[in-house]
Image 1 (tube, rainbow, N blue to C red):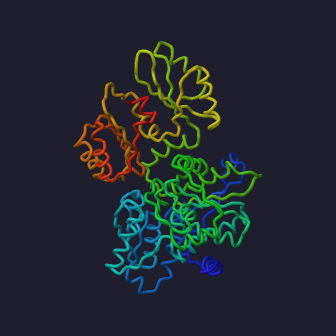
Image 2 (cartoon, rainbow, N blue to C red):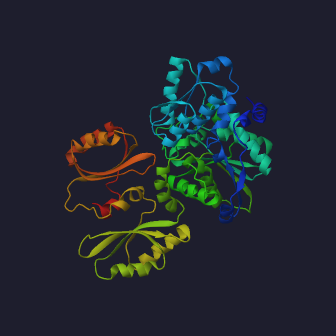
Image 3 (cartoon, rainbow, N blue to C red):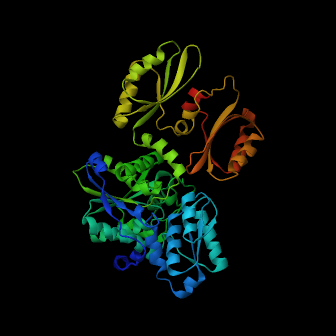
Length: 504
């Protein structure tokens, strides 16, 4: 299909039988902070709290009676699933929805409430896709692809049509990317109708499948994707979505978990609505892009693509938002072990607000403290603080970007093992589902002594475990063989400075 074909499909899409034309709201606080006129396209206000029903209904509404009678099936991390279930109910067809077991509960329950038959399997969208294809072959169901289908792409492209009706000529549009259907549809329409408008795709750093495809010259399959932003956790983009994005996207920006959490808070402060991680990607990417851009005030649009987030995940989001916004610094400081030294340290940091303070006796001459401090001027404030402390001869280590310190050590300071021999420290990640923690304990704990263990349910994408295991040098090879066979993502943290200072 060429551009004219797609423009015709977008302009004739049937999405408004079921979807609403969402508002384009001015973000006053972000506009003031970023020095541009920031607009938020509110797809979080759709009936299923996501843009996905546009493409799903545009596809399903044009199926013939024979296909509808077979029943419809899709694979989805959640939002496409709700769109398909709602659309199938509208046309009176059965809908089977295959979802990863890691899908947030709120999305699973929403699909069930819309009449979809839910099948949970695997840990990612790609696992669900493979199982859905198996059911297609065995049961003859009609598969509705979540992104790599012209009618689905055209349905999502109606968002671009609405933006140009509402704002005429925006300078830049920021679009979250998973499989690429949303970006392909919007980018094609916007670039054909407003060629001077830049279209920027935004992906998580740990699930940047479109960026990898553009660099390779074609779709590639990533070995592993992070699923904090579960709505865009796709290992391989579509063939058609890649073709269109390669031609119409101007650039890709990637953002990490902390930047995404900060963007969720930004959206809440603007709208009093809580979007899901994928829904905040465009805002996170916009902030990162504009921070390094030059030029005067312009109209920029960020698409809030969804708001299906588990409530218990908010613990993790709020904890990481301040660090992602450079509003909190985490530092390790060594002070003399003597009366009045803490008071002297507090005087050194001035009137900055202390957000966290952890201390445990280390020896009779020096104490090591783990401190969280509120920042008033982002990274510049942090750098000047560290310089001031070092000028006063305080040894300081910046832990603000240390993943293990943020996830574990801040909750464990004081657990040092005096005289511990052959301790090896590892950090593990595994899908948060029943049985995985026990599998870990049975595999590792049955062979070696576990000398340190920390597990905290973050209400996030993965269960996180920090463990110390006593392993003599001559058993290291066998130990690593067991870890590899376990199949969980893990990192050797034995040389991590946060471990050496507080736990070793």
